[in-house]
Length: 247
Image 1: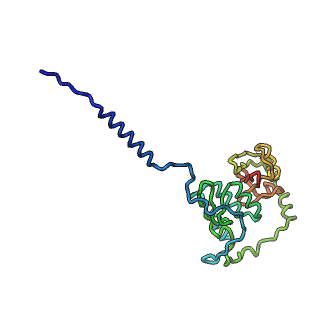
Image 2: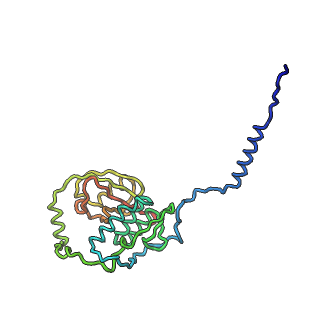
Image 3: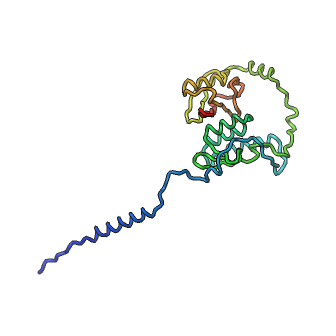
């Protein structure tokens, strides 16, 4: 009985070589990828912020209270759909800030692009688009006066200071959330001024007070404000927008 002899072949190695050549050819045809940001892009370029309010009419006449509720609903839900929460916070602070220079500084601090020179359309560094409806930027032409506003008492600065002094000073613990990503814990008395808090941030983060803008509930807090006057309760978060050195 004769022995069977199998002659080895180079078929496997040839197949591997062909597969390798095919992969090389495929790699040569594959377009080169870069780490460019995705998204719609920043549009025609950046412009300085112009605070010309949009002119619009509501579908139905609304009161100021209804307008504010509509704004709160938008700002509370918008971050859930797209973009970064910190950018939405900055946009709200800028939209609710009456000082144009401060609003421009907030936008510069988070490095966003304003292709039309207003807050209606904004892009971040990754190309994410942020659309802000007109009711967040101005009042409608058909705004009606709240009936309840006529009965509200007029409070002057003197009576406001007296009320603040009559309130009991308490100990509060708050978080200071900076646009740089840092977050600081602060505990002290509720009659501390915003200027003192800025000095605290300067000592911890080496950021001059002139580069800091403090916000709570969408309201800009000036240096003379106290936490008590700004109605900042304990366990709250105060947002601090940090301006770049060259702004």
